[in-house]
Image (cartoon, rainbow, N blue to C red):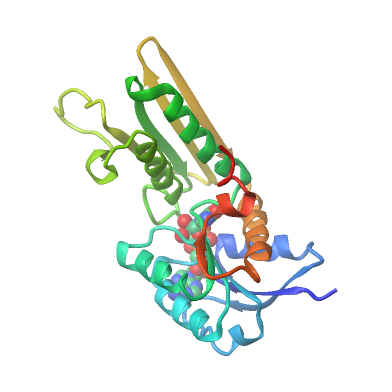
Length: 249
Ligand code: NAD
């Protein structure tokens, strides 16, 4: 059987190592080249079928440039991109297929779907709060997953996300506005990643929680995305597309 060849960017990192480990037991996939900071993507990219990136946001311009030049599909798991860097990804996705997801776990993508449903069902009487906790080495905050949860909540409640998201609270800030979406980022220890969405209403509270206990879950999701994206038309896809959740009502 012909194996799908992967160029892994950010290969020496925690996720890079998890992806190498997960690939070693797959019979249809192989890591054909590894790349980390300071190592060129050329010529390694030429022999691969798909590029998987779990590095840092500043890698993205070169990543997109080289993938476009060589017509390679990309799976981007890196989080914390600036608006300009996200624009770069969108532009590249007009030429090659890209799966760009803040979280590749099946459970978190189910959480995205459930969050949307709960926000629609519960309506404006429920206050919205997102809490995330990650290991002490994580560089960006809040997590890309928490940002995505806030995006889903603001869309479901038809709120302007920029105006209504509040990062933490301090001081004599007055009562909580009904339209506020609170985000709180906790850091410490070696926790892989936890996300909580809290819907606090009059006399009751609904909480959705996801707890990742191993990076293998993200790695397996990224491999699933890599298989899926090879041969797809150019476009910007999410993990919900890969899992077929976008079509679920
Ligand atoms: P890490 O710091 O352990 O590893 C990052 C690796 O990328 C390092 O080896 C670093 O040297 C390398 N790197 C940095 N800049 C580079 C560049 N320009 N080119 C090539 N390599 C470069 O971090 P991590 O915990 O492995 O996480 C990596 C990224 O993946 C982070 O943005 C994190 O938030 C994200 N992440 C996403 C998911 C998901 O499911 N989407 C899950 C976990 C982590």
